[in-house]
Length: 277
Image 1 (tube, rainbow, N blue to C red):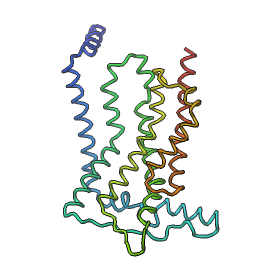
Image 2: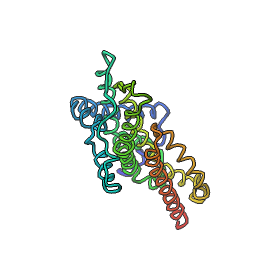
Image 3: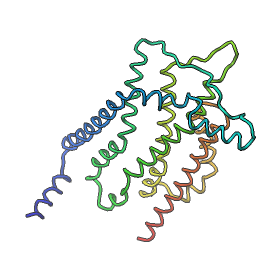
Image 4: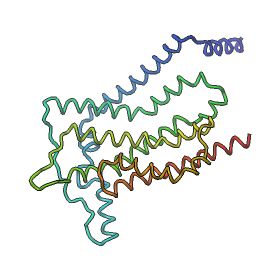
């Protein structure tokens, strides 16, 4: 009896019609949206933590990254040449609904970031029934490793790339007659875009893993075009780092190249497993 029920369940899943798939997708989307909204609401009511501590952290001279730069400055040069002594700008708001709108916007973005593993799991739960047992084995750990890479990218962008870019661009002046008053919307948009982009870029090894699994991309090809990849990475680092200073671009290029090398190792691991089977 149990075997018959299992077979019926299998048939139901494999013979789902188009509208059944749509209905199933709708359920997963609703769960994801609810999770994002719940996290967003919780974050919304923690305004001081969200703005004063997290969002505005990189504009405080005692931010972790600036203190590290200062320590390195004394260690390398014996002076405070690389210490951030003051921020060269102030934040302002010129729109009557600006602060409230940005509060809603950043709460939603933060809610998505916090609930990212759950959203990813819902995506995985939707496509899993359509995969073979072998494909499911290949994708084992997908949610965990994708989430880890995403959060590592977010932390890298927030603690390493964003502070350097904000400090450089915020204090840059074409003339002493012009003061920098940065609009709140501009600051939040800049910070969230930069940090979120880093989170997505750090998914590179997972993308290469699946491309290697289906035979589209291999370690030999990636190794062969390593030099060209380095040029592309340098160009990409220049695009992703709005500040034209070499330090920011190098700090972006190094992890990108590291991810490329890790991706080659991932592809080699996939190929080795295929040969052993």
